Image 1 (cartoon, rainbow, N blue to C red):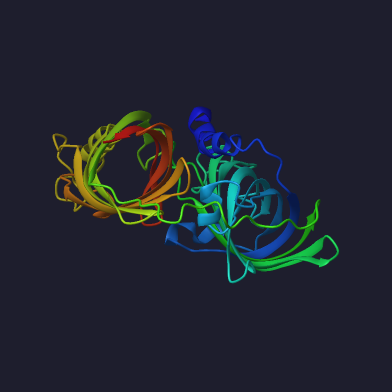
Image 2 (image 1 turned 90 degrees about the vertical axis):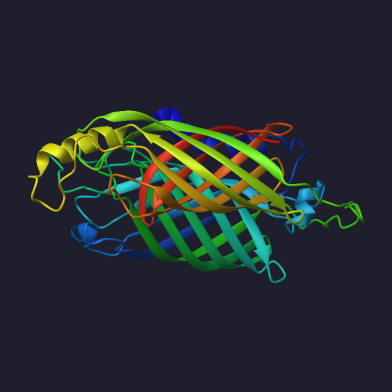
Length: 367
């Protein structure tokens, strides 16, 4: 589990380390209070109060020294620590650390943050001592959070304020069952403090007529990891997901994708075998033990190019799925890092709506 969790931090931290020049920095300390989102009936017993917590962040500013900084309106990048108390004895409290980007809009008063990291829970599922916790099947978890805030820096000297909304998600990506995950939506209020005075942005280093037109590119992606079926103690199995897709770049920031996935999810073989003996032949959930576990999907997607790092979002539909498992629509969101020319590595989360299926470690090539 640890090796896959570390992948979530590896890509952004490699990217951050490339900026060796000293940038201005600031910190923000946020308090939040909100509600757990009921994404399914089976998490109802986990909603008993209003979660609250703290979010502490250290941020590095950009000023246009590199081309991508100007293209994205001089974003910040940083690291953060999150503490959340779910106000529920079964869930307990969670801690998380992560890496993030801050993007700015409307004269830099609106901040949008994307963060990816790892978390730890105080009360994971245990068959004997905590069997009601169907949200967190492992102690170590994946954590994603999104912030949308109004921000004002240097309001009183180096001090400023920000306030808005936080959406934070904890799960183990179905590395081990159970894993319904928990999503929390909260209101935030915060103080920020700048360690340096304001600096001037660089506006004149971008090429005036640079073109990003490309022919259609063809991608091959190999994704793997370990996952477990929805029934605890069925066993973790390696999976292999193969992606073949074409993409067409439509500008500096974006490319559109169309392709297919082939899924060899070996944990499904165990679940099919379990279902074949758990239900009688006249039960609506009966499954023949010889049912094929493989699946094939087609998808459309979008890749957002930042620097060597990009963010990939895909929406797919199964065209071959003999075993009636989950819904017919799937999603994937992940990060890619181009390590050498067109070769990339990455990590992503494959889901069916609000239910995670797998954390995928990826290697591939864009030709």
